[in-house]
Length: 346
Image (tube, rainbow, N blue to C red):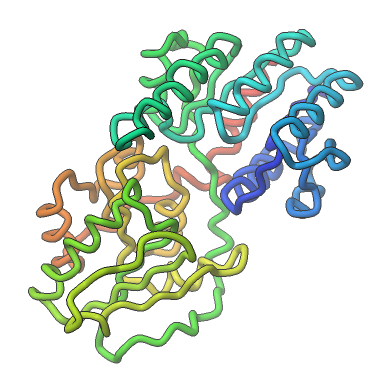
């Protein structure tokens, strides 16, 4: 049976866990699956689908590189795939796969090739150097590519990938996670609708635009409550008269987002740089419409996109008029055959 190796190295964030878990669910009946990770205890559920390797190595860049080298020294999969961090993990996997004569599939898990355009100060040249120069080495070593949507595919072909070698495979979601969910215990004033922001609160993620838009939106209608889920980043900064319209939840446990998606009347994502974010498809799985900035492959998942703050304010202010996008194409059930067929070529 064909053996596929996935590499997550020292990374174990929730999106990595859920993406890899769904890869395992879709592929384990047709392929033998290995996972190279230095944090097997934090990715415990994956042991149901993967043979785990690398747990004896430290969770550092050197440690994850040694873990992969050790794995390839004693194992010979038909293909190896980086799950995230294409600019760093892609280089590590590409170099070692080439050294050991193993086909390498480069997964473009975000939109890092465009990140420098929206970065400021010293970060702009640093991001360009990391992703567009150093990170380009991984593209040159890859045999095949996975893009999350058509924009991701264009980024790869613009940077040297052959179009026929790039397959569009969106991140799969398990829509069963959103059925029979216990209601959220969040408390908001009666009669208010919940507008949800989930994730890191940074300038790149659009938090400054949120601070600009919220007062204008609330001046038009006072029946909205803005709820922020996530523990890190810029704090909401609105006039004191609107402070009771802000609720801070902080970090939620792993897998704890479905109740918040279901409680929300709208999810907002004003980010300046993304790939195809899980937060959008999971909100849709909970029957919650979204409003998101039109960057990268976001328009591949929702028609409710904006480009200017004024457009964002108008859309949120009339949230009842927004359509609910179809999420079925992004479920792991719908994507299963596409993933199986992609790996069958190895």
